[in-house]
Image 1: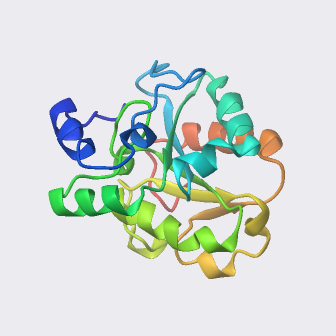
Image 2: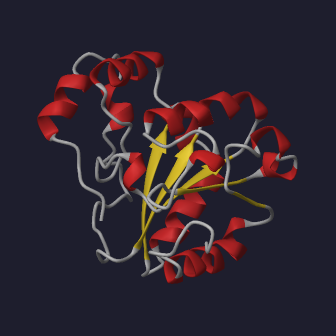
Length: 193
């Protein structure tokens, strides 16, 4: 189970940004309840601002569906605006998930949705701010598996150096199998996954 960032540290950082509500979570239908400490820790990452990602229905459907899996703890993160990005870089604080305020590098899986090409640089921003090496080849066994799906996964080549696995098709169909397999392989080496 990921460790939370300290409340005082978060309060200090968020007091200097324009819209802190983007980064605190607590919306209706979300939960900070962890199913079990050995569950697969998944963070859904939308590579755009909170306001853009929250309006995307597919993201909401996959989040709600994944919450029903008893072997997965799921959380969310969105790309920060430049004011928070600057604060995180200055304070050397990693980007965190909305639900538990856990640094991204502590998750088992970071799952990106690829809705449009203009968000690709935001994927790199999220990885960098989250303390995850940008290139798959630089990641080791303690780093999260980075997966991506959505319409742009059909043309994955521009992101191939940065994503460990692309998912093509309807997430509602393949996510139970992918997460079940990753849960069974939890603790294995990266090459075994």
